Amino acid sequence: MKPHNFYAGPAILPQTVLEQAKNAVENFAGTGLSILEVSHRSKEVVAVIEEAEALVAELLGLPAGYHVFFLTGGASSQFFMTAMNLLDDSAAAGYVDTGSWSAKAIKEARQFGEIKVLASSKEDKYRHIPRGYEIPGGLSYLHLTSNNTIFGTQYFNWPDTDLPIVCDMSSDIFSQQIPIEKFGLIYAGAQKNMGPEGTTLVIVREDMLGKVKRSLPTMLDYRTFIGKQSSYNTPPVFPIYVSMLTMRWVRDMGGLSAMADRNRRKADLLYEEVDRNPCFECPVRFEDRSTMNAVFFPTAEAYEAPFLERCKREQILGIKGHRSAGGFRASIYNAMELDSVRHLVDVMSDFANEHA
Ligand SMILES: *Cc1c(COP(=O)(O)O)cnc(C)c1O
Image (cartoon, rainbow, N blue to C red; front, side, top):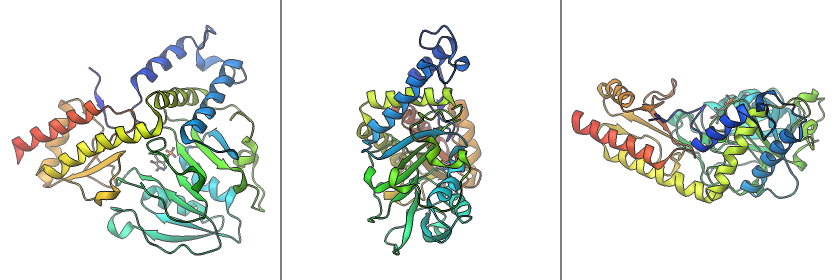
């Protein structure tokens, strides 16, 4: 039997997607060739990229005026590319610091304009999502990180502002419905909740662009990619293909509201066990607990190593917390089945019966 995959990223993909991907590596779309060896200008590949872009629009309900690109460089390149394209030297943007990824985004953006950190949960070890902070006038945008992959917090409500939100959705894109009109730009590395590593999704609203005076290298200018089916140069075809298959799967499962229900059920099951179990505790504020990455700690240090050992024996992989956070982290992205979470919960419960 296949192990239960709780890795944070690269992460679990639907089994049917892996099977289709395998077939395409052997014989892609009846071409007799592998998808790894055909031209990105072939009609079969162009159709894949067009479908991938159309699925993004369909799943999120994108209104007219938004552009969708699949780029390379990871979400980490978007930390600077967003500011480079959207923030002029003399302008300011607001950032909310909810974890290591936000902090990196802030650091990179500072090279391009004034960055005002409007709120931070750092003093609280990133265990909550800040609320009720002042948003001053005159900002170009508000940058948020929708899901804190490392410390396990997530936004379920969005700040009440007319400022366009620029959002790193790397670890929870397509996990719930969002009020798309609040967002001026969304970016997401594929390898958490959308596909394999190797491509980064960018969604940008037309009116966000063309407002900076600096000159931009062609490959770092979003406008280069408009109307090019992500193929100004050679795109990462295989990661886009697998992302497209995964988005089809999300659609066929019922779309984002079905995903949100599915994710809520898995998360509730897991957090209820953590709260009930004497061997574990979750420090994250209840209403901010992520449905994607459940972070929890042993109540005594002596539980840590034996629990990890036990998980290994039970075919539970990837449960060790991020090196900067410690403890445990169960990543339960869209593709994770409820049965795998049930298995983890059973193992936690047995562990407590034996150790507590
Ligand atoms: C993983 C992750 C990143 C970094 O992604 P790369 O594609 O490795 O650059 C950025 N932001 C968040 C929220 C992440 O989870």
